[in-house]
Image (cartoon, rainbow, N blue to C red; front, side):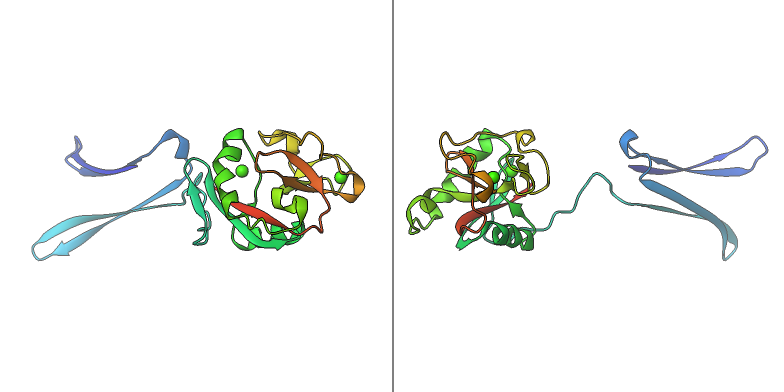
Length: 202
Ligand SMILES: [Ca+2]
Ligand SMILES: [Ca+2]
């Protein structure tokens, strides 16, 4: 953005002051320019004072909440935190939300791979299969097998969609998303208490 003031004398001998504001084509509605001019008497001379005020709000830039201290930045993806204090699926959603984040949703194979190392903090002291699964942000609690994310977006539109070979489709008693470290998705009973990962996208 550039603010310019130009003075020139016209043919009748009057001084003309012009205030102009130049900005990018994509933010044409962002800025207001308000200019006032007044003659200020200063000892023997009179001075032309121009006050130009530019105001506007930045659009297209969202202010994200800062993640907590235990969140790890994974460049190009976001901030991630594994919670080893096991919770039910609904509780996990709430914990992530309270931290300004959301329960993990895979959007790419890269994200699966980039978050694998977080699992090293998995306590692995749970009973049986619970050591190999964590909560993830999708469910089919409204309609069986109609899987949507916690933001009500169809799961097959997230950019990542890969069912576990044998554990997928747990029926009407299993309506909350879980995943293995390899990004194999399945549904599980929402009341199961598991480890979970919160994410905050960049
Ligand atoms: Ca994600
Ligand atoms: Ca189900």
